[in-house]
Figure 1 (spheres, rainbow, N blue to C red):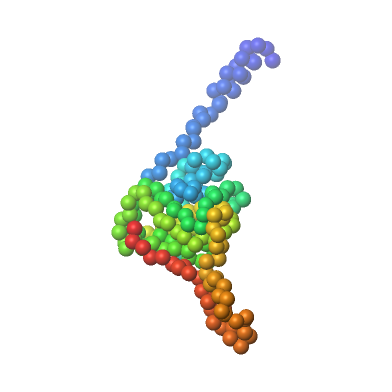
Figure 2: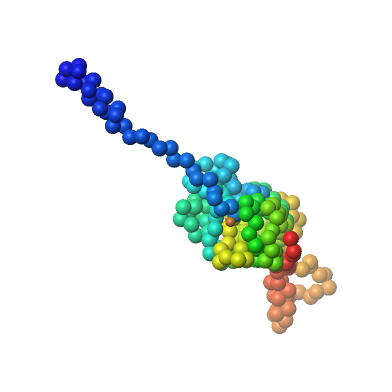
Length: 215
Ligand SMILES: [Cu+2]
């Protein structure tokens, strides 16, 4: 191949290089909301504290799914990283935690719920009204240890809800890890097998499982 042919081939190759379009993440057209403190999983992705999260890092407010789900990603496959518990560090807290929401659209709201597995820790009633763009809820009685709280924002005028998982390391400062256990009573005789019902009921009854409060 002579020099002229080589140059022609080179020029042809350059001309054939396709125009590369930069993939720019679309800015969210409709806003919603998420928990910023303690940081939710989507917040950690948005701030870069957890890397390589995929599209959720650009729209932490968009974890929207049907009401009644119990998943961190709101059932959205593109946000499946949010279900990967091993990727998210826990925030150290006491047993009472104030959760701070940041909304980008103040949808009319029925309730805000805080779940620990199948247990409803707290529910806050918004009465179908529009919430402020930033608001907080204080939840107490969170058990010690590493816990993942699932917060759910239930929208009043759609079948949808928004989901945010917050990983907590609860403990250290709680002198009474099980406040539902009655204090020992020295006048109480030792457990009597003929009267076990009262004792069991008293021990098993959780205190203030659900709180209703206007925000
Ligand atoms: Cu919205």
